[in-house]
Image 1 (cartoon, one colour):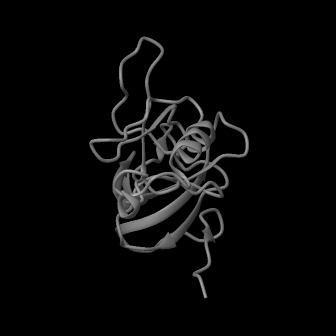
Image 2 (cartoon, rainbow, N blue to C red):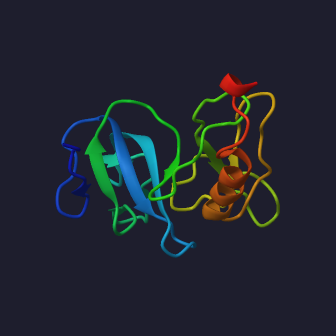
Length: 157
């Protein structure tokens, strides 16, 4: 039986630590990003509050994207796109995670973006397989899977 995801708006984690998060992407309709992220204390005006590292302090309130869910899971894993599994690498046979970053309009990379803000997606695998950056993670996964699923694997070389 798999654990149940908890809506952040209904109940928040009560202790600091690493949790698994599902966050709807703000720009790509229907995409839900799953990541491991730290829940910790942060300054919020005159007091400290327990909040995920991808929150936003607007000067009055600490905000988390609507639709965010969490799961107590201290295992650090990479980025996944819910409902879109990534095929193992045809060269090394490993399951790799997706890497992503937030690139600004002027081309600079933003530090510590939230999972709902990421806009450049890639797979960094073995020395034989690296993907270019894609603007849509679903397109990246489709391309990766078409090139790696059912292809030559380490065992068949």
